[in-house]
Length: 331
Image 1 (cartoon, rainbow, N blue to C red):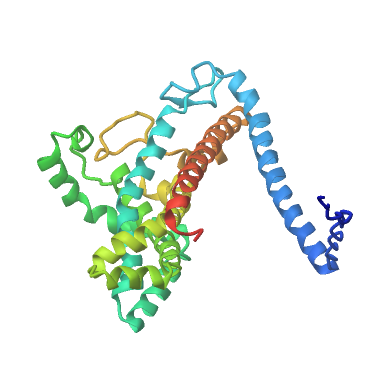
Image 2: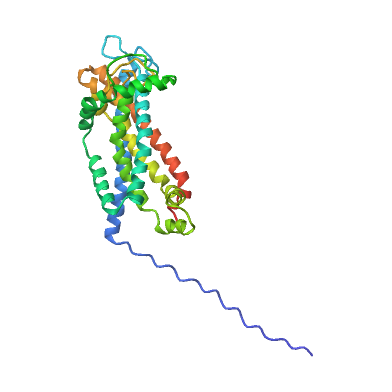
């Protein structure tokens, strides 16, 4: 005869106690609202600037007798205004490119020297000097470039033309006695943006985890190999961000470019010849003498510069987001 063991009744499921809501302090609520308001205000200011530029430029663009995107001339103050922005965009892009090609490698090298090679006292002194150079006004750089640097670069212009003239950009067609060219402007801009890039890059390199550097050295890497495998990959997003800050100043620089460059609206790829101009310098040179249509044309060129800056910053943000996963910043 079989016997069955009585089964105990199942216990009812216990509901987990409801999570207690964390009480938000008034200070946190105020700070959160202030931060959110600051972000919204920034977007509103950017939108207001864009709307202002579009509204002010529309009338001048509607009365333009030429092609705004392809004409090389700039004559908006006549009865039949005709103006184009291609020469201005070319000069802006070329001068900023020259500045970046010179400034970025030098700035990264300076930052590496300060953070990984220089003795402590020398590193602190160089850091103070770099921070000081970043605060020098643009007009000082412009005066220095016009009075001192441009005459000194005549020999370099001739040397580049003689030995690298087979490259179109270094082919000097005008046998002039002035070095007020896009090449000189690019050098001045490079000196201006170098402290900014170096200062930001230096701070980025100082944030590299010490454990990464010591691990590379412990595996037998030399100092340069340690920098190459541990410091530079970690700091790539910061280097890109610093470069974009410098590029923003180079693209929008006004006074220094207006003082150094000999402006012309004849588009030329020869950077050792006087001529060309930039958007910012053209606005500074002509705004005071322009009529209503002329000012609208200058504002339209400012709108182009505004769009260029947004596109460059957007591209930089995409590159930074792609590199972030490999930088070690999230570890």
